[in-house]
Length: 214
Image (cartoon, rainbow, N blue to C red):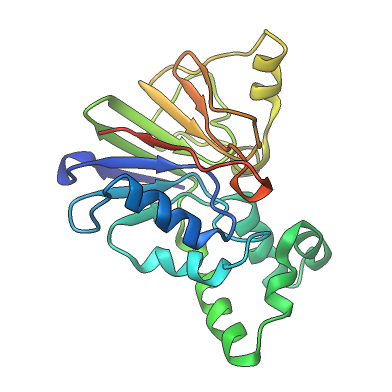
């Protein structure tokens, strides 16, 4: 469930909002920031796939040494679908691209999707700005702790904490300097103390948010 990364191995470290198949747009954003695949690291808050035009290319990013990601609920829906469960749920939420692929493309995509089983739910990375925790939707506890047992479903799906903050009564999280979440499309990046919500809805005519940690 947890993965630990040493940020000291990289020149710059960025975290990016939900990609959702928008491969070329992401490449353009990285180019604008002079991202170096030899010196820099990009961490995704999950949801590489669905809704956008190029889910397969976004899955192939998992093979790049400069890229890592936590699991998103869309990757989980795809994995559940491949096991024969909730096919309709994934299709309804943007997974129709998989059914439309040619046979050979679909075999390739299936292999890449199966590789998503190795994606962690939570990434911990120490950077110049301190200890960062990255998860898709939430870290469902009041205090972060390495390898603490938490609900995988809530990590992937929970919106309660953000909803609370939006209503003026959210509960923070201790144990790390920064927490980075995607999952819920918002009109702009929202920061509540050390909690950062960055899914600015690129695939929904919004934009990519890239936050530099180092």
